[in-house]
Image 1 (cartoon, rainbow, N blue to C red):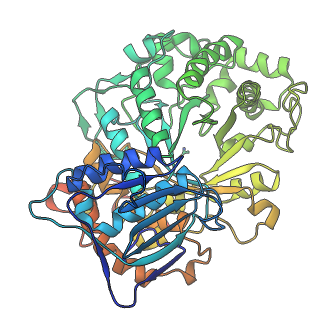
Image 2 (image 1 turned 180 degrees about the vertical axis):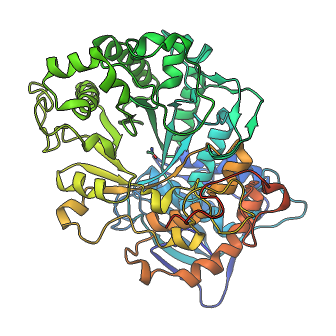
Length: 563
Ligand code: ACM
C-alpha cells in the first residue's frame, strides 16, 4: 500500500479487491469528527471535486468517521483503525487527532492525485480493501523551522504545516528570533520589527564564503498572521512551539533596542542586524531591565499561543558567548550580587528566571541543552515557586531539546526532565545530503536519506524510567544557506519522510526497520511530493537549477570531512 510512515499493522485484501467511489460520495460524521470532516471536504474535495455531503440519517455513507477510544485500538489517544471493504470506509480514531492521522492514511491510499488542488479530467477514485490498525511511537514528532535567518512568509509556514501532517508529524517549532532577524510583531516594542526584521545584505553561502547577496532581506509575522498559523495548526492537530532565543542569538533585538546589550563594553547604538552567519558576540545584558523587557515580549507571546494548543514555550538558551559578560563590570557586579557561578551561572540565572515565570503562568519552558549548564550550584532556581526543582536547578516541567548529540538529552532525562531528541549529527536537515560538488552550498555532515532512516531517538543506555522522558524527536531546519522556500524544500525532502517513519513507526531497533520496503514505498511517495509541489532532492542528485555552483560550503576542499 506504499504508506509512509509505515503503519503498525496493515492487512491488504488477498484478492486485490477495491472499493470504487461513485461521483457523489457521502460522509457519515460522528460526534467529535466534525473537524476531520471539514478537512476532508477541503482537501479531498479540492483534489476530487467531491462535495462530500452528510449522508443523512439512516444512510450509511461511503466514509464513516467515528471517534471511539474503545474501538480504535490500544495505541493511545492518536491511534486509529481504517477498514475498507464492500460497504465503503470505516475510519475510527481514539480521539479527533487519531481520526485525523487515519484521514492522512486514507488520502495516501487514494493515490498521488489526491494531493492535487483540482481534479484531473475523467479521474475516478477507488481504495484497496484493507484493515489498518495504527498508532505513533512518539507523541512529539516535530520539525523546527528557522524563519529568522531567512524569513519564510506566512503562506510558506501554512504550507509546511500541510506537509508535516501529510507525514503524520505534529509539532512545528518556529525559531522566531536570532542575530540575523526578529520575525514576530510585538505591539509594545514596534522597533523589534521596524529595525530588527530586516538586514541590508546577507552572506551568500557559508561564512567562509567571500560572496554577498546584496539584496536586503526581511519580513515578519504580524500578530494576526501568528493567530492564523496557530489556528490552522490546531485544526490539523499540530502544536506550534514558538522560540524567542535568549540571552544569546540576540543581535537583531539589540540593534532595535541598544539598551538590551552590554553598553559598558560595546557601542550597541552602532549595531545593526547581523548580515553574517555564525554566533554573534553581542548578547543580552544580565539586568533586571532586560528581564522586564522580555517579560513584555513573552506576555504577548502567551496571548498569541494559547496554553491549550501551545503549552510549551522555547527560550533558546544555546550558544551564548561569554566574552562581553567577562569584560563588563556591570555583568561582573551582577555575578557577585546574585552569588552565581561565574558567567555560566549568569546564563543559567537568566533561563531559570523564565522557567519560573513561565511555570507561574501554566507553561513549560523548553530550551536547547545548554540550559543544563551552570545551574546546579549556588543560586539554583529560587525556592518559593512551589514546584519541584531538579538536580540541574530547573523546574521539573522544563523540557530539553538535545542538539549537541545525545548527551544533553541523557543527562536531562536522568535528572527527570522530558527531552526532545534532535542531535545535530543525525537530524539537522541543513546539513548536506550527499557528498560531491553538486550539493548546493554544502555544509556540515553528509547525512543521506538512509542515514536519517537509521536515526534512533532513544539512546540504548537509558534506564526505562529515563527513556520514558524521551517525548520524541524533531528534525531541525536552520536556514543560513536556504534563501527561499525552494531551498528549504530541497534540504527537507525526501529526508523528512524517513524522519516521519522513525518517529511514527514502531521499530526502535534501526537494524530491524523495513529499509528495503521504505525504498520501494518512496517511489510512490515521490509522486505524492510531486503532486504537492515539493521541490525535493531527486534521488539522482540536484537538478541544474537546484545547484549553487561556486558558492562555498564547509568543510571546503582539502579540509578534513566532518564525521
Ligand atoms: C543550535 O543548533 N544552536 C541549537
